[in-house]
Length: 157
Ligand code: ZN
Image (cartoon, rainbow, N blue to C red; front, top):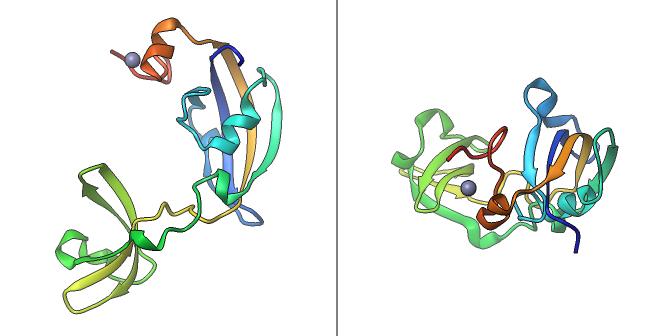
């Protein structure tokens, strides 16, 4: 078991063979407490042991990224919960749920209802990451007990 560390890194992520859908190089690097489960497990495993200046190109299979598509997460809901501009197949919208905001994908549009998919948009996809490690430091005991990063790039409290 390695010492818990805080890592700052730039990343881009793409579905394998596609253009990147996110690229942190447009802004601030991501700061994470490694080992706390705050990023997808396949990527966390690749990052453990890396240090500032390391560059990685890794492919994470779907099962170790956002998981496999769960058909039980397709649900029929009233149109009134989704903004009108997203009432078309393939559109995405953010819904407020008991578990917090969730991105859904509209699959089918009825008279008064929508079939929406609550699976993460990247579910079932093998992902390519391009990583530049910016900085690492040991996690503080407080960060380890809270399970998240404090200060720059983390939680301020
Ligand atoms: Zn905290």
